[in-house]
Image (cartoon, rainbow, N blue to C red; front, side, top):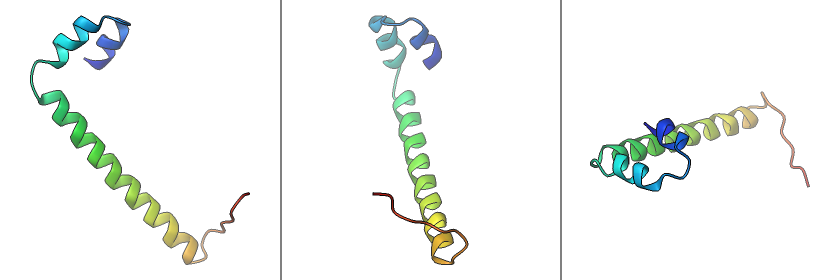
Length: 62
């Protein structure tokens, strides 16, 4: 659905009609955002642990 609305480039009425069908799109976007944030936090913790354990060298660039 999103690809089809983007393909209509600039047809704001068509996009509004598709998205106004209910809360399903909003809820799907929220769920995806929360899952993405959770995964990003897990990935960050894994990276930091790997650096602390000395399995990966890291340095700050200035």
